[in-house]
Length: 483
Ligand code: HEC
Ligand code: HEC
Ligand code: HEC
Image (cartoon, rainbow, N blue to C red; front, side, top):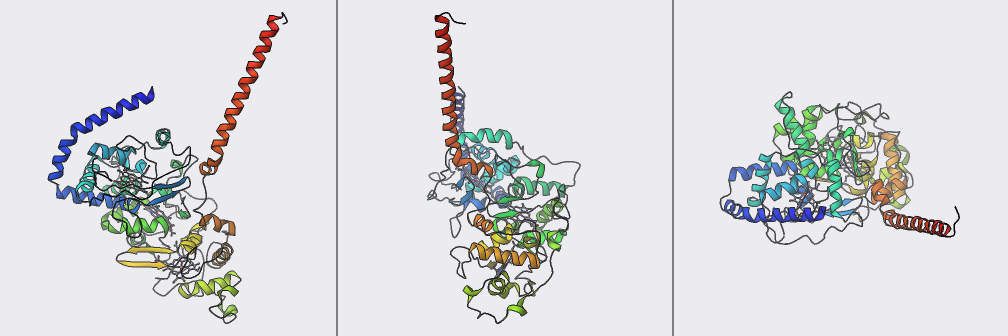
């Protein structure tokens, strides 16, 4: 029944679309340049580029970026105005439905790897501008991405997103709060609808939806941990000045605080650095007002932890500098692999282009995932026309591939010397980071879902059989006159 309804609704939509199409085509002849430019800014703020462009020279918005989810890779699609491979046949209404509600033109549901649950807050005006930009400001690319999304059962059933959406995708287009300043409202819109900061910085629950009671309190994004960015002075960014936050958004680097790696490097590179100063300030002011959430394990801000320490005097000259294989302890490995840039005492270079490893949230945090991820994956970011690069020491490294044990030893040396002494890293933690980060329960359950369903079916069959047998026996008993 329901399916038939959905089907006729789709038919109705299709008819409507066909009816509207000629007007869309007319609009295509005369693009409104102001609107297109406005849309380009919305697309920048919303960072559509980060996911819809394949890394290393992919054509803008042609898709093919595989987002490693714990359930398998979800590949972004081509959203150029190509009629063959992109969204060239989308009407503005189709586009609005895809971006804000996660429903494709053909009626199929998108996975929330596309952050439609955040974009649901986009205003109608911004959607209109965004649509104008994608139709007239983006070059059509007629090739579909080479890889496609193929999740294992039961996650390949896109219709299951209907249930997910009922629970998690509940936002409405943004309404400014008249009790708050224009700057705070702008910041809230930038963080929510556009920047979708919470899609990384808010932890996710069992069904991978954001836990709204822990808004911006920190969450895993693959191997990286997006830290607590609530206004709390200990666990969050309460101790960062507005200027430090603005500098961080613009460059991905704030001295004595943090350097953006992983998904944050992408957010800075593709989105934040291009926003006007007033927007970055609004974002900072908003974060500093976001309700504070503290992790009870933390008593000191991560960026205040640590002092310069050097073991160099004890180990210098003990090994030839190229004899990396003979390095055994964390201190020796640090000296061999890290000290050339971060200095033997961990203080970094004078201008902090090689940052200090103390007074750094990557080492001071109670959660050491970003230290491990930095060693395995390095830092790569292009901001303000400058390329920031720390080489990676993971698989395929050009400088030297470190084993799980070596990464753990270096991490523990860095943590105990310069960082949070409460944090520890085991070789198993490094192995988890190497394979894409901790798996949420839902992903860990995946291999058992099919067997569980089969077991369930068998149990039901056995119960049925038992029932039939008892009824038969009773029936027989009644026949032969027993009670
Ligand atoms: C965090 C990553 C991410 C960001 C940011 C993102 N998208 Fe997506 N988008 C995806 C993925 C992944 C898919 C495909 C999902 C699927 O197949 O279920 C997708 C699908 C789409 C589709 C459906 C196209 C089709 O027919 O398959 C549209 C339209 C779209 N995105 C537009 C946008 C726009 C506009 C923006 C910026 C406002 C944006 N996306 C930002 C990841 C992203
Ligand atoms: C794709 C995931 C992702 C998105 C989207 C994202 N962040 Fe981040 N963010 C991270 C990660 C991961 C880090 C840790 C970076 C590191 O230490 O190398 C981080 C770090 C930060 C930090 C530094 C915190 C600290 O304690 O060191 C701030 C501030 C921040 N993000 C703000 C934002 C804001 C504001 C937005 C939205 C406009 C945002 N982020 C969007 C993943 C993300
Ligand atoms: C060739 C120079 C170089 C070497 C060698 C190097 N780093 Fe780095 N490191 C950098 C640069 C550059 C950055 C990023 C600076 C920025 O983002 O502004 C960085 C950043 C970091 C950060 C901060 C990351 C964050 O998320 O905030 C940590 C932690 C770190 N390095 C640890 C190490 C460790 C441990 C080693 C040895 C295994 C090492 N580095 C080797 C240059 C280097």
